[in-house]
Length: 150
Image 1 (tube, rainbow, N blue to C red):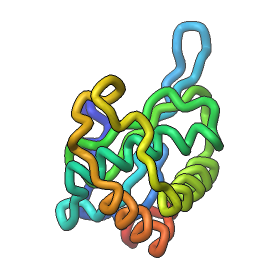
Image 2 (cartoon, helix red, strand yellow):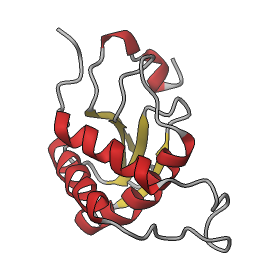
Image 3 (cartoon, rainbow, N blue to C red):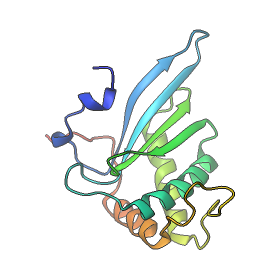
């Protein structure tokens, strides 16, 4: 299977969780790691576009306070979470800590970074209220690295 996430049995996972998906090694030995940061239960829940977009802006900003090796953080097309790509090979617990610290900041946020026509490709598609709801819900459940239902 060329697409790693297609090999994941989405009926056997329990959100919220953080999962290390892939570690790639480049020609010169550089490592890049991709993480699945899942907020919603697949095929049962989804984040609305306005909320996931706002949460993307906030997590992309706040997670870099704890992790200086982040390359990208992008919402999943299914709108159940995010993929994060980082230099090196961080462990899942490090990412969980950064996610949870960031979500606590989201709950205190009053201004969404880069929510303007110059810095955002769809600046009108935002909801800080939804982003806070998603953050509060995920924090109340707690992220885990044990993502498979037993």
